[in-house]
Length: 144
Image 1 (tube, one colour):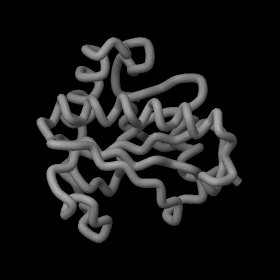
Image 2 (cartoon, rainbow, N blue to C red):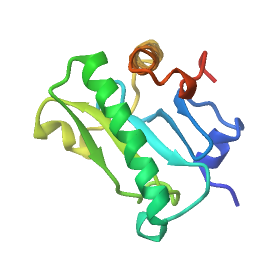
Image 3 (cartoon, one colour):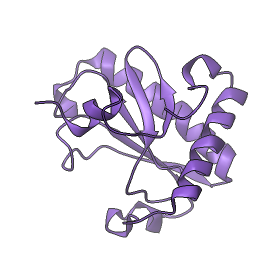
């Protein structure tokens, strides 16, 4: 049975993609800690991050790093937060979000019903920032 992330990757469910390559994708979280909160998800279903091979983890971290840099640029945040939890969906994913303090790292404060227009705008800001960073080949031309 496919995970919800596989269904998003395969286009069966909608997603606000900001990154796509042969190994992974990045799309906005539907329950963000901040606008621009992105999930970096491998195309291959792996449940626990500790079960992934080192090559996959390295690639996911490189992508998360680039997305984090784009978030700092696009949203003017002091830092980008990074977490791997894996309890919500049994499919490895890295959370990357704009952060200005440790209070921004409290998943209990995630937005239940984020503004759709603000989500669309955040996705586009990230796409623009990633393109400006030289990552255009990995950035979808438009929202998928």
